[in-house]
Length: 410
Image 1 (cartoon, one colour):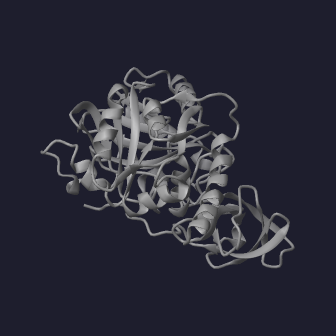
Image 2 (image 1 turned 180 degrees about the vertical axis):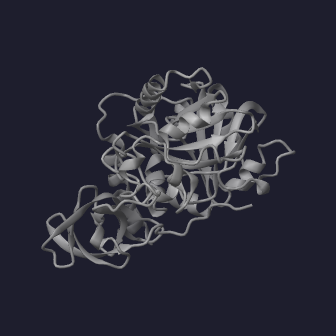
């Protein structure tokens, strides 16, 4: 691509990110422990989930498009300190958490984790989160920044309903811990350089984690996971030492900082949901095509159930109840289709759904989107029409992820 084309594509991707990142906020966000660090590198700060975070970096090799490619081809560092980090203590933790989330928490081996969903009594999604059974004897949970206070209020309500069991303690880490993600093909080598010599990153599997020292900083936690579809790690770091660890990573080859604009286009290419766009408290796990978070047919969680609201989307035998709409990938249109863009059947006569997320894919160099359509139109390859600014454009339901993922298996 020539410079002019690259500038246009960057603007297209950034426009969608700006709409996403500034929606619903009018005041200055809460600074993360890396605020001054971001500004020193040209971070363009916006408010997201109530926090001040960089949407991109105004510097050489900066911008949404460049940062997106940096992550796909090398490694990008993202500040995700707005996320909520919770440590659960007590013998009754796993039992209680399973009353709130759909995943098999009790079945986790020490040092492993999973993506799961917090549900309402009606069976809709309060939030998606990562739950890990730490070898150190606690359960570590990471929830979305925009949802964390709502999530904790829900947990407290459920604790009260179950008599405030003495063997369950929820410890919200508040602002004492920063959270940083390093993602991309060069992430493993960069991370290996800052862990103790006794740690062999090549033996750490996807969704495994442990407490460790990073760049000489004690009290950290490393988890092999992320939100880009690439191999990578999320690093929980004492807030006062976050910049030291990030600078140690930046000193490694092929590593640079990236903002939330690139994070959004990366996650959409990987077919990953953004809470508030693609799933929310009007969506159940089957509509969201997230039934896999409960395990397959015959799995313990689907058979035993026991999570709040499960009876609304599971049959008594654990089978999935039919739903009227499903989340799908969409591609083939000539222009990006943004959130709330209407979707029609192939005739263009009957509305069948709407887009929940859309952007121009920097990797594929074409528009992609995610949305909900009536179940009869959800099969991959189905022809549909997209109403973009009053003009119907042909498109197809496409399999997700749009871009091949590279989750690491040891």
